[in-house]
Length: 482
Image (cartoon, rainbow, N blue to C red; front, side, top):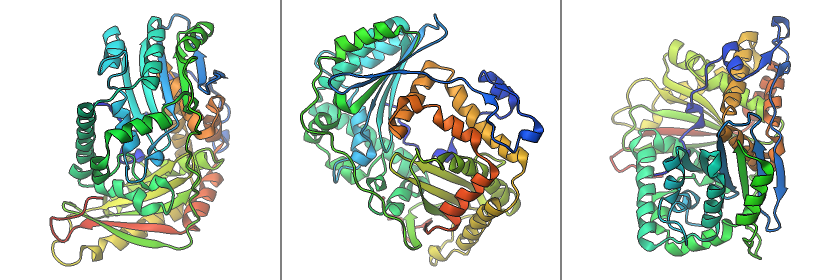
């Protein structure tokens, strides 16, 4: 089964260790002084990515990033398809993710699970993931196996052959994944239910993992149409990074991908734009097993390429990343109102969502109306108070520098591998439509000041309308499945 990062909340990820030692591990040289630390972290000299980008006649975008350390020995081969959860067919939520699983099945010249043999059997690895905006296939192999992987990726782009038994088998795998991530986790329905409660018209309102009834309704004909519509050279970006010679990669790409033909019909694109929210809304989500009630506050945010995105990421980290974050210290450690709390910033290609959430301390109310649990308004007040204090109060120099350092270190340590550098290029393609813009986000993070954090919190949170989502125990054991 593929390991697919359709994780319930991105704010649950663990940041890498902070501090100068971590920056040094990432190969950085810093000359920031204490007097300058409230200024941007712009005096840290960071390595940059300089990929070679070209487009084949059939529309395939090819990005090559050779490793400066000649003889490093490994290479990453990735294919990024511009199709994600937002492109799921009507009534088929979760289909892009389901299709990701099917891409590891038989092709005209490859047996089922052949990518495991092509990677793991030579000391490499392969994987895939689906997001709201893209589906990505990842391979890491010894550099002398790159051409074989290029042939295999071209093969499954053009020659996928899924049978009815294979389709039913993989659909069962995805349904099992849904049960594990959404139904078994007591708070899986809360995080799964945020998108449907928040988005008004944009297809981001359909969670990437989908709905059980939609998964059950999918058919093999849907698979064939989806492959023909989206899995084509003019809807993909091929990235090769690592110990490779660009001219040799170009020749291999031309040999294996150059003959593929793009269909005449254009790739369907999501043109819907989410309207500005004009009023506050309240909604309640129930589940059969809720150990303690929870609350989430949701606000609109710009897309991932927006100039304010970096400040929003820093604000989210200050509020909700780690045990020393303001929400954790304020609501969990001091006030004892919550057993956990966090702040998420989900910035997709088209638009974004901000979320402040908290799970109450103590058990769920038994009997009566769980929606009237007195802890819910207390959690809401506490969340808003913490945000207000960050937006209007003093932000200590050390607190801001710690968070900026954590975010930069996380990104830079990831770039120590060929796979990490390729991923950075791929995200730049998805978010900014240009692989060469991969370093823009890091420069923007360096430039974030305290006043930037406070401005974006006032603009997008305190002065904006929100959705309040209450998550409580269902009156009976028949709580609905979102």
